[in-house]
Length: 348
Ligand code: NCD
Ligand code: ZN
Ligand code: ZN
Image 1: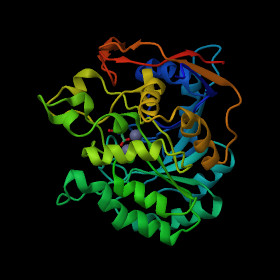
Image 2: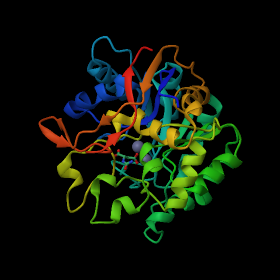
Image 3: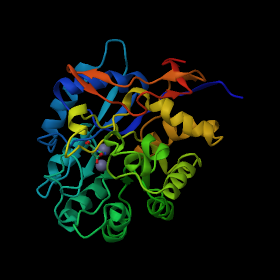
C-alpha cells in the first residue's frame, strides 16, 4: 500500500478569495498547498477592468505569508458592457489569465453577469482571436427550469452554441456536477475542459437535505444525484487531461450560511488536497492524482507545470468543527471529520 505521495506542487484552477479581512484570513490556507490559483472576480463590485484586477492582485500578494511562493492568476468578470480592448490589453500584459462568464443572478454576486449570452459574442470572438481562456458558470437561471436541471439545460442552450460559434475558443466548464457535463466535455475538442470540486466528488444531494437541512453542504451548482457523483469520480480519476482541480472554495461566514436565506458556497480551502486525495485513494487512482492536481491544468492554460514538489502521507487529519475568521466563525468542508491523508511537506 502506498503511504507516501510526492507530486509536483498543485494549482487551484477555481477559487474565491473575497477581499479585505476575509481575504487576508483565507489566503494562507490556499498558499500553503497551491503554487497558483485562478482567482474568481465575483466581488461586490466585481473585478471588471484590468486596473481593478491589478489592484486586487496586489492586495492578495500582500496577504501571502512570508516565505511562501504563491501567484494569484486574475480573471475578468464579463458584463453586458465589457470593454474587449481593456480585456485584451490586460491579457497581453499578464494581468488577466482568463475571463469569467456568469449568467446574471446564477450564483453569489452575479447580479452584474450576462443577461443574454448572445450579446457578448463580439467579446468571445475577440477572446478566441487573442487566445484568452473563457471560464463559465454553466447554469441557466430561468424560473421555469428546475434547479437540478440548470447545468444540463445550459449546455444545450448556450455552451454548445458558443463552442460551435467559436471552435478555437478555450473554454473551462467550471465546477461540473453532472454526467451531462462530462459527456459534453469529452465530446468536444482539446479546447474544452472542466474543473471538478472536492465537494462534488464527496457528496450528493442527500448530504444537503437528509436529516434536516445542511446549509454547509449547499453550493452552486447544487450537488446532484448519486449517479452524477459516481460519474464525476470516474472522470476526475480517469487520467483524461480534460479534467483538473478547481476547489471552488467559497468562504461565507457561519451566520450567512445558517440563515433563512443561506448563501451558496463551501469553504474547502483548509484541507482541499487531503479531501481530493481521499477520493483518488478510494478509486485506486493514486498514480493519477498528480495529473489531475498538477499537470492537466497548466497544460490547458499553456503555463509551465510547477517544478517544486509536495508530499502527502497516509496519516489522520482531523478537520476542526469551525475556524476563526475576522473574529467570526466559518465552518469548513468536512468539519469535525477525520481525513486519511495529510500534507506533510510543501517542498518535497
Ligand atoms: C460561489 C461563491 O460563493 O462565490 N458559490 C458557490 O456556491 N459555488 C460562486 C460560484 O462559484 O458559483
Ligand atoms: Zn460558479
Ligand atoms: Zn466558484
